Amino acid sequence: MNEQSEDLRLIRQIADRDAGALEQLYDLYERPVYALAYRLLNDAMAAEEAVQELFLRIWNHAARYDASHGKLSSWMFALTRNISIDMIRRRSVRASAVPVEDEHLNTIADVESDTETLVQQTLEGESVRAALSEIGNEQRQVIEWIYFKGLTQQEVSERYDIPLGTVKSRVRLALKQLHKRLSGMERGESRA
Amino acid sequence: MSERKDMTQDMAEAYALGGLEEMEIAEFEAYLQDNIDEQLRVAALRDTVGLLASTAAPVSPPTGMKSRILANVLNGSESISGNSKGTDQIIGGLSAKQPADSASNANAAGIPAQRQAQTKGNEAEMTAAQSSEGRVGDADTDLLLEQAQQNIEAGEARRAAEARAESAQPTGSSAGMSEVRGSSAAAAASENDGAGTYAARTEAGETSIENVRTVREAARARGGRRLWAGAAAVMAAAAILLGVYSAQLRGELNNMHRDMTAMQQQTTALAQHASDMEQRAADMEKQLDSFSEPVVGAKVDRTVALAGSQDDPKAWGTASMVSDDTGVHLLVQAADLPELSGNEAYQLWLIKDGTPINGGTFKSDSGSGALAYTMKPDDYDMVVITLEPDAQGDKPRGRPVLTGVLNG
Image (cartoon, rainbow over all chains, first blue to last red; front, side, top):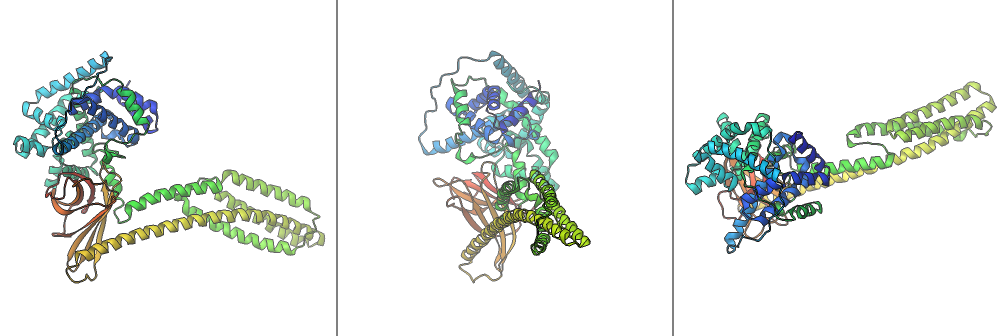
């Protein structure tokens, strides 16, 4: 019943090289991690590549997951984000050396979709979006720039011409407020 | 100091969100390392940040993605990002572990020594398992040595008994009695094989010696010629038994000798490695002072291990502070670095109060590189080696590959 203990059981089995457990974890998280990678990379093929890298790391390093560092889902999303941001950075390095490539590749979306999962995912997203809308524009903006665009505080300061100290305090305030508003959810549902 | 701590504490939110520069991440993780309360706070912040992922608009994954990914992952596909191959990051969280490991090995040969020690441990265990079917881990070495000594003593006692038995000229008339003793001793010996412990064997050895003594005393007491001859036969049988047993002991001793030789060889290799490093450090030292007088009395003040970052867990290195009459020099050596491409270069940074100071750049050759830097002032908190897009930067732009704490 408990999502977190089930996640923990799965990750332990994966650490013991249980391929079935990896597939179960994949089924549970495919959609949310793909959606995040897609949101960050805006490219279906790159997003798939990121998800593959994520599960490759999980398969090879599941033993390194430590529940005291947060929930498994948080860990997986953070990994997905890191992998995606790394890909963006590499891409921009390449892009600066090579003429811009057309990133729009044809991919056919999976027609079958699990409605229940989708609804659940959407609902949770709605709650977090609602919390985000309550924290004020400026703070929401830094979260967007940092979390979804992959900028550092320093880069936000330079690019948007905001004093670094201001950026930092917005980040702190944004996270504190979000934390307060979502603390009920953190211990409960997070998986779609 | 507490001001500094507050500054670092203020990084927790940005750290969890992923908004810190690489240098700041290294600094924050060093701070996080021994701060349990802060680790918990960061874990909670991570969970908050994790929820942000759910705001991504739902998208249907491409057809067949699951089977492609699972097939690739389970077939041992290589990591797409070469540098993160073998990575084990828990996004900062894990890195709380890595420096802890490296900190405990803060000496020149620390990391290789640890690696070799682990290998050695496995080998020792295997050898022990092969030789006695017992589980003798390297933690039991002391016990093992002690037991070996006891075995040797038992062996000596047995040889004395053998000598006596040979001179006794058995007539074979009391074979029955010797058989009884022989079989009980054999039973003891086979039990020992089953249990597979040296201690049990030693006991068996002592029991056998006691048997011999008993027989010998009994023979003396009786004094009768026939009886004496019979006792001599018993002793001969016991001696034969002990002879077999001693051969086993010798085998074990040989195995132990082999183990010790292997261990010595490894120690020698390590010492060689260390002296190679020293030699290379000395070479660099020479280069450094090639324009001045030869250095007299250079001495290594301190050597710290450099730990690979989360993306490069295999990279390792050392930073040695060498002082001579020209000043304090930092000699940095790194190995198993990710290969550079194009204009990329490694750059050394010395961190003082969170500010990175350019310590120079270097190119690696088959994953190894080295650099010397004359320190002024000679008080820095950390050394960090980053992978930079080129060798021209005066501010860190790339990611850290190696870090080491100088003041800690």
